[in-house]
Image 1 (spheres, rainbow, N blue to C red):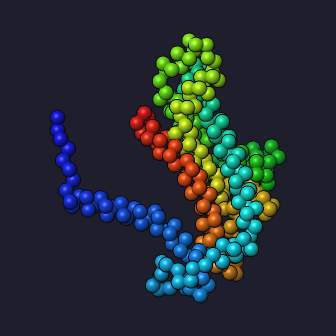
Image 2: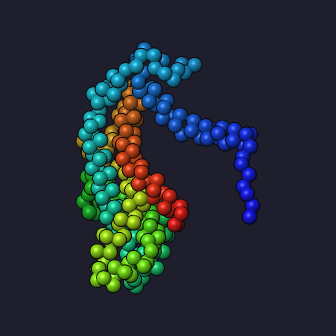
Image 3: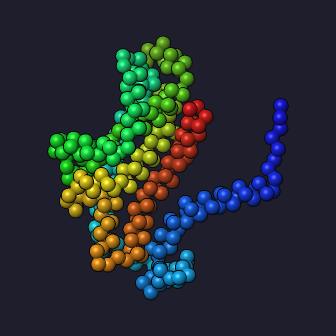
Length: 279
């Protein structure tokens, strides 16, 4: 039995410096955008010596964003798309993952292999076929057409499959002896055991649907149906562009993601921990 030695002072210093560097690279741009969005019109955001703290703290840039583009209407459209995608993945990925993990049926291994194979293909490869499918269904220029391709993500199916596989099989066997059917086993045994992973699916799906830019830009033609990420492009005009308003629009688009993560963070870290230990 070997005892692990405690890190030296120099090693601790190097670790903290690396953590500080990572923190600066990840959080730094967000803090700079926040600072820019709060600066007044008299401040030069392109100064040779940039100032992080605003000299004239103001919220006028956020009001000007709402005056320039219908930001709340665009946010509502994004919320509808994200809601459809989250609902589709919560229901579809859960049912598919449970079926692959717990039910015995012909072709289960083939189906699982196909799910894994789809992860190899980048989204740009299938975007043309997705558009043709949405157009054939008559869903172009609709929010449903934007949300439909992401309603069930193959990665989420595999995440739920892994989570259900980690549930002890003895629990299902005991419930089966007691006369529980498939739906009862899913509701009373499966779902309570995978709430952490389900929150991971919700967060990733919401962020992906909320931040998506390319697919809504292709599907939507009517500006009144634009999602927030597409609609905010009007802040960067051809003849004028106010970096303060662009930063304010970026912060408006970022706040819902923070809110969702803040609500589900306890379950999120639980799901990540479960996946690291059991997976």
